Length: 205
Image: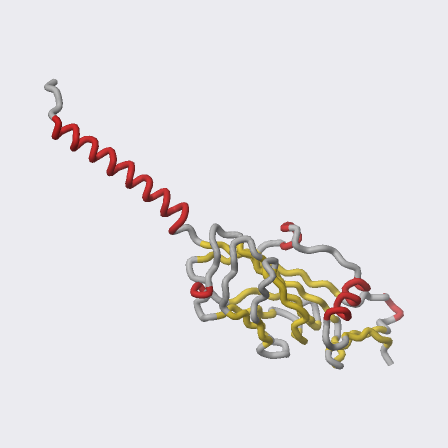
C-alpha cells in the first residue's frame, strides 16, 4: 500500500472534522434548539362545607352576597417543567383558557406565581360554561402559576388552547409537592383574610 500523499491526508482530516461537526450540531440542536417545551397542569377541588348527615346542612357560603350551593375552592396549577422558558409568542391565540367541565363558576379568588410575577386573568362568564382567560406572557422554566376560584359543585377544570412547540400534559399536583392539605376552617379564614369582599358562612334561615 502506497503512502498517502499530503493532499489525501488533508482530505481525510476534512472528512473526520465534517463528521464530528455534524454530530456536534445534532447534539446542540437537540440540547438547546429543537427540544419541545413541556407544561404540566393539574387541579384539586376542596369542599368548603362538610356534610353533617341527616340533620341537614345549616350553613351556607356566599360569594359577593350570592349563596353558593355545594361550594368548592378549586386550585388549578400550570407548571413549566420543560427545558426552556415559554415565551409570550408561543401562545398560539395570544391566550389560554381555563374551562370548567362541571360546576358553576362564581369568581376568581386569587392568582399567583412562584416567581412573583402573576399572570393576567379574566373571568369571561360567571355561569355553567364560565371560562377564565390567561393572557400571553413569559412562563419561565420551573415556574408555577396558581389559580384559585369558587365553584358550585366539585368543578373539573382543564386547560384549553395551544402553546407552540410545547406539550401540555395533565398530572396529579399532589405528587409534585405544590399542594398542602388544609382544613375547611383554615381555608375559610384564609379567604376572609385575602379577599377585598367577604365570603360568609352562616346558618340557613
